[in-house]
Amino acid sequence: MRRVKLIIIGGVAAGASAAAKARRCNEDAEIIMFEKGQDISYATCGLPYYLSGVIAKRDDLLITTGEFFKRRFNIDVRTGHDVQRIDRRARKIHFTDLATGASGEEGYDKLIIATGASAIVPPVPGVDLPFVFALKTLEDTDRIFDYTKRSEPKHVVVVGGGLVGMEAAESFVVGRARVSVVELMSQVLTFLDPEMAVVVHHHLGEKGVDLYRPLSFRRGFQY
Image 1 (tube, one colour):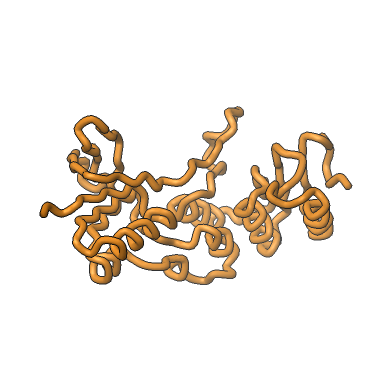
Image 2: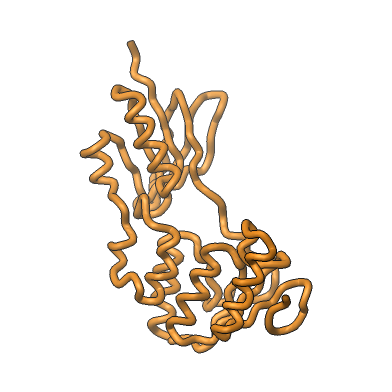
């Protein structure tokens, strides 16, 4: 009987979890995981704390490695590979090896897309300036880390009041920078009930964080 070939696009939380689960469900399947970055399965919510120094070493963000996945689960992990096209009719993916520039393709029986979301960058003037960053991946964190070590910014603006945005704000407050948070919605942490979000808004104000929301159009927070 022919082995099932499974390809997983994305190797961070969802992709690595899917790969490990697939191996537990099928010991004989051929499993290949493609990841655009150089690392897999890292702690995304820990990224801001590496910037503040609460997490001292970059390696402490890494939960596992491609080499471990190969030894433990017999999964072919290809980091630094950018999947650029999926041919559903032919059941193939087309990719580029970012280290060499070489292109290739792989056929599949089953395909899992686990790339996660992309950072939403508002289309405003200045987003391409060298001191404007997204904070989504470990590579993003490396860029911010290098910049802050060189420049030691005194004022940081965090666009987005979700979990990572709040953690980033906390981390820069710990680093003694002035912090402003800009949030599109009427509250930060939109999964909270409004009554709970008010507590967070109070706490931000107590810590000296300026909070800008569309309902206020002024510095500070609303009750």
